[in-house]
Image (cartoon, rainbow, N blue to C red; front, side, top):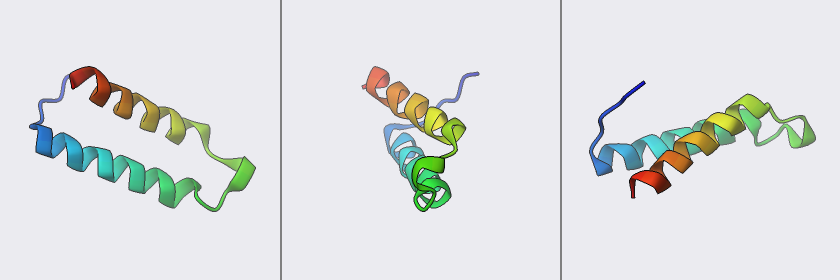
Length: 51
């Protein structure tokens, strides 16, 4: 899958992914939904690779 975004748009995407995962997992403690953590990690890693 390829998604073309400007740096500003990608920054907004990072904010949305972080906030979404926080809303979903923040009160779950040890019962976090790992799939959301995985997606968050992948999106943030893509940001590091893209610079």
